[in-house]
Each structure stands twice: as C-alpha cells, then as structure tokens.
Image (cartoon, rainbow, N blue to C red; front, side, top):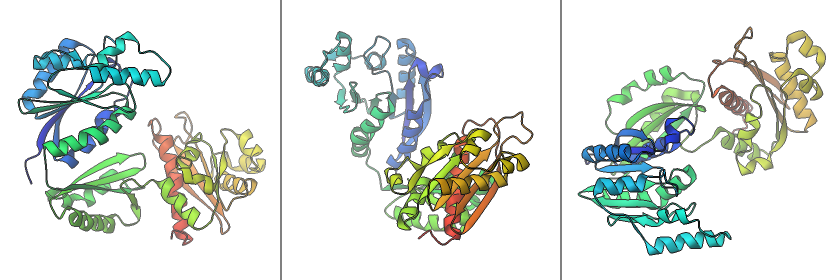
Length: 411
C-alpha cells in the first residue's frame, strides 16, 4: 500500500469555541478519510478571526498535503474562510459571474431578492474551483496550488455531508488514487469496552486490516479497515473471527440499527408492538419510529413519568404500592397492560430511577409481555451520563431482540 496522504482538518466558527454548537462535522470527516487512504494528523478549531485563520492555514499547509476546512462560508462579515485562504495563498477574491447568477436564481425561486451581502458567496480566487451546494447558498472550494489541496466545506452538517459525498470524495479519489480500501463495523451490546479490547488484542499487531474500538450509545463497535485487492476477503475473515470471539454480544454491523433489525423481524412474523416508558421520556418510541417501516408494526406508546400515568395506563395501584414504581413487578405490569390496551402481540416497558439523590440511582427495569408470557430484566446505569436515557432505550430494544431469538422469531 502507498504511504497515506497526510491531512489536517480546520473547523471554523467562534460558536464552536464557545460550545454553542457541537462539531459533528469533524467526526464525520475524520471517519471518512481513512477509506480514501488519507491520514488525518491534526484537527484544529479556530474562531472567526482573519489573522488566526491565516496563521492556522499557513501552519497546516506546511505540514499536510490536504487541508480541509468546515464552516465560515456564510454571507456575513465574520464568515472569513474565503478571505483567509486568499490571504494565505496571496491571491485576490473576485466575483464569479456564474456563481452570482446561480445565487440570484436560488433566491428568485423562493420568491425573494438576494440580499446584497450574499454576493460574497459568489467570490473565488484563481486557484479555486467552486463546489456546488444543492442544499444551501454557500459553494465550497477545491483549491490546488504548489502540490497542496485545500477543500472548503460549509458548516451546516446537512450541506457539508452532501457536498462531501457528491463533490469531494470523487475529486480526492482522482487526485490521490489508492488501492481498494474497505471498512466494516461489527456492533456489540452488553459487553464492556475493556473486555472487547482484551478479546481483540491479537488483532492489534496486524497491519491489514487495522482495528479500532469505539464506545457508542448502541454499544461497543469494532471497526476494521482493510486495503489491497483482497480487502473484502480480509474483512470477511476478520469479521467471522470477531463474531466467534464476541459470540452473543454481536447484534449487527455497518449501518444496522437495532430498531431497524427488530422491525424487520416483527414485519416478517406479522407481529405488532406497543411501548410504555418511564425514565426514557419517549426515546424508545423515537428510536422505533425512526424507520418508515415502523408504521407496519408499531401501534404506539405511552410516556408514563409518574404513578398516576402508570395507573391510568392500566397498572394496578396495589402493585405500585407493594413493590414501588421502579420494580420488576411494575415493569411486567406495564408491559402487560400496554400490550392489552393497544391490542398488540408484544408490549415493552421501561421504568427507572434517574435522580442521584435516590436510594438506587441508575436502577432500571425492562419488561416484555407477549403471547408466551412476560419477562423482566434489571440493569444498572451510571447516573449523570448525558446519553444514559438513550442507552436505556437501546437496551430495551436489545432485550426485545433477545426475546425474539428466545422464541425463535428472528428469522
């Protein structure tokens, strides 16, 4: 394999430095670059300051072959990425008549006249080729000079990802042709990151494929990247070894989602589902309805954040009084009653404690009721994690997956 192309990434925007916006663009681009044979060596964030931007760009171009910027392409005075690149390369910005025409037409189609300050989005330097932006007004740039490549992308993720996929990836592949590079992600749940790392230890000494371990809300993910003409075979072989080592913890790969997989099983078996959830505040229902196919099996759900809501939903008051709202018995009753009230084949429930001041903070019970009976699980979560509720919702889907497998309904 050829030596990876060194790259740096610059995220632009004072709002990023202030924490007003989370920089998801950087993570997205960083995950994409290895598949292009490009090695990201540094990531920087810079505010909307022309001098700072110019300095960071000069340093990046001194180290890397490819420099990618995200943000700072808007129409306002503090959008300075174009100006900074022009100053760094010693070139002059001028208005491109075709870009200006396209901008005016874009505003005209929406029944508006283009504000005067938007004209700066039609500016380019001689070394830059404009990259079309079908989702916004800010064109990107592809710049080649002195053996270096600068790519400028808009800040809004919706605009950035479209431009990256449609305009930047083809150009990078043509400019830096590489042997085939493929990636695969194996997804696990209910297994500790340290355990996965220990089991994957033999893979870390292998150069092809390379392996990385990442903690995500839907579990620990093992990502493989292989290169060469036999990349697919290498991935297939390594994936099988990983599945053998991690056994029952593996639930999917690549773009699979638990909601998507479970939904397919339910549709194939002509089964329907209802949910009732405390603690997760609707995140379980949100995960399920994230796929359009959910309307074919999901009858709906109830968010029961207190005893009154649970009792109104059909949970017997004496069960809550005897066992407490957060208990296996109440989780079971919740699943049974929502299954009955919404006339579905399966009911899933979640009830838990979020407050750190409680006797058992982070205690969660998940219940499932179906035609074969009911089952509950007790789990413990770390209080204070921003993604705890999301993890609990995903855990409920994972338990539903377990139940379907147990009932031999997964095929």
